[in-house]
Length: 535
Image 1: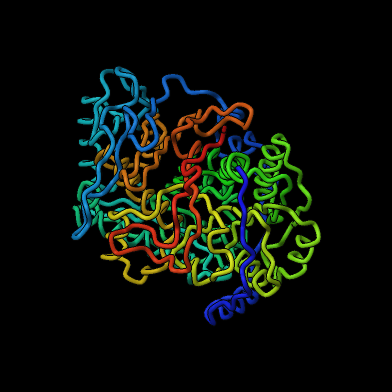
Image 2 (image 1 turned 45 degrees about the horizontal axis):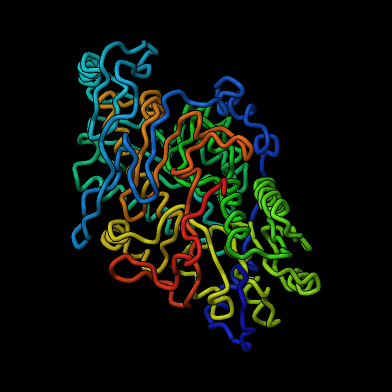
């Protein structure tokens, strides 16, 4: 269908946006990344000690999934117990997904024999006999079953690019969100009596060498058990480090496609390349532009994402008339906007990931009174702060796709109780970190008292499906099918986090969530809210 947009009068953005623009101009970043790892899954598997090509193999007996909005059979809900003041939400069904009589290898690599047990809806890697043996092992070690684990504590770490432009608005809330989720877990008794703690390491603007130094410190000096999230542009360059330190990383943000291919990583966010597929199909189905433009970060991952947009839209008959490649350190987008005005695309798609770059774009588009007639869409800008950065100019003419529904009463109640500084600053990666924390809790409980890195990874990789609460409505599994595949061979489930997400329309400058956890300023797109990587 076609869309008609009235050309708005010139609008002046709030003073706060000008201040934000100054901050973005002063920010720094790094486009450094491992280009080989970005494009070669086998390189990641080899670095992590897995057989080359294993990531793309289909999985036998993959867990079934249900329709959108339903928890599939075999799903382990990961919603926390309701926080004071939070409305109760429905979880998924609690049936196990692994085949009966087959359990994953346990400690020491011995194959399990007998009937697999379930722990709170998760299929345990231990049968009853093994579970009893592992209780004895944990008791003999007085609970100190691995690095970073004691009888009453589990120490985790995270790496965060606090030095990026607008880092105080974007990165700090992520760390606060993890700590809030940990506090809620600890108030429920922790993980089998073990309380969670977090060590955060700042790698500045996400520079690769500083990020690797953070990992060395967390593993060697802080002696963490595992990572919870990894909020840095360097996430594509740490695969060999995770294998070296044998560090699982749960709840990563999937900036790099290789995070889904690395057996040490367990993302709780759709990969950027998959987001590009889904967004492009939405543009094809809803916007139906005759011409389009692209704004793409120069990093390898964002270039690959833009390639997927071009693949889908070109096949639909739409013509690309302008592609802008921008660095993460752009101080102005004025020249790029002028070139778009000359090319006159009907719709513009951005895969820049860096919110500061698009904030500059919107400020300067307002100054030039420019906007494409059929609007702009792109990823990673579902944030409560968006309205104060974008202002009125894009209202009702901008769309963003996101992994989770916005915002959810349970999630927002947890942030309100344990991370009060996040008020007005929560965004969809904070949601991913929150869900990752709850998944860690559920998997670690299923592992039992003999908690080791090897056993945690076996538990997370055993084929179970982990569902968020119904208000966030997302599910993840780290089976071979979910980790592998390509656009032409989409082995991942079309009803889980690698296959579907959501499209929101920006409708108001007031984007701070309502007190009940409902979104404000973001409306589910009325033409196609649920979007897919394949159609």
